[in-house]
Structure formats: C-alpha cells, structure tokens
Image (cartoon, rainbow, N blue to C red):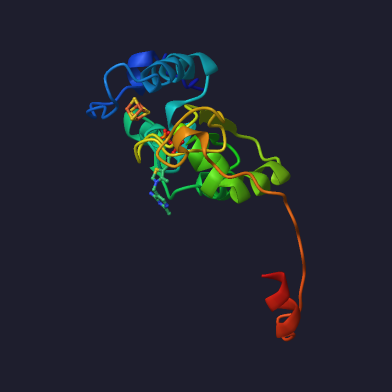
Length: 177
Ligand SMILES: Cc1ncc(C[n+]2csc(CCOP(=O)(O)OP(=O)(O)O)c2C)c(N)n1
Ligand code: SF4
Ligand SMILES: [Mg+2]
C-alpha cells in the first residue's frame, strides 16, 4: 500500500502573478498578505479552497489568490457561496466582501446566509465607505464623516412613520402620501 503525501504549502503557493490594482498603501494589501500566510497553516489542500467575492475594491481579492475563486455580482457573494457549499461540502469556502457589498446591496443575502448558518469564513473589509465608486456613504460610515452623498453630515433626519393601505382604495393612499 502506498501512502499519499500532502505537499507542504507556503505563502508563495497562494500568491498569483496578477497585477494588484489597489492604491499604494491601501489596507487591503495587509489582509491579502495575512490570508496568504494563514492558508498554508490550515492543513487544507490548495484545491479545496474557494474564495468568493462581490464587487468593490476589496472584492478584487480572488484575482490575487492562487485558489479556486469567483468574483461575482454586487452583494450576491453569500448566495453563490451557499450554492457552492451545498453542492460540495468538502470545500473551505471564504466569502470576501466590503461594508457596502455586504451590508447595503447585499444586506438581504447576508441575512439569508446567516439564517442558513452554513459553514464558511465571512471576511468583510470595513473601510466605512464605498471606495471603488469614490466615497459614498455605506451602512458603517460615521455620521460626522463627509462623503459624496453625506456632505457636511446634512442627511435629513425624519420621524419614522409606517402606514398600510389598499391599492384599490385611492382615497386612503392619496391622503397617506
Ligand atoms: C448592481 C450594482 N450596483 C452598483 C454598483 C456600483 N458599485 C460598485 S462597488 C460599489 C460599492 C463597494 O463598496 P464596498 O463593498 O464597501 O467595497 P470597497 O470598494 O469599499 O472595498 C458600488 C455601489 C455595481 N457595480 N453593481
Ligand atoms: S480606493 Fe480602493 S484600492 Fe484605493 S485605497 Fe481605497 S479601498 Fe484601497
Ligand atoms: Mg467599503
């Protein structure tokens, strides 16, 4: 009987020859470097890793990892990851996302992912803004931080009111508006 030996992996095995398109000094480099350093420590064969992202600066991550991966659609990484894990539970699934990708457009997918409670690593780069599209307010932007969509913190505050009307009864709807 022969015993198969698992090759010893190093950080270099997870690096790619892709040109990294992040700005010089961007914090995303540090996270990429940490993940590339930790993967060989996990004792998982390289072909069992899959890295799934949405859209954003942070979501360029799969290009820079020498693993299987998928740069998907804005906010939809949890949905794709759910499908991958369901069809191949053996894989080590990593979801890479940004605060905008995960909590704005992807908020609904995130809630369903949490509800399913499937096994994955969910890594959200929280730079408190939409960076790729040049600084718009995200769900984690601080109230006093000016952005293109929150100039001088002038986001009008309102009183929340909820109302429900039958679409066939125009009088009620009209008054509500
Ligand atoms: C359906 C859709 N809507 C809007 C956009 C534009 N868009 C691209 S990235 C992004 C926000 C990304 O923010 P975040 O997830 O925080 O990533 P960061 O760039 O900050 O790393 C938006 C609104 C898009 N690509 N697709
Ligand atoms: S714009 Fe994107 S790549 Fe540049 S520093 Fe910000 S998050 Fe990093
Ligand atoms: Mg962001």
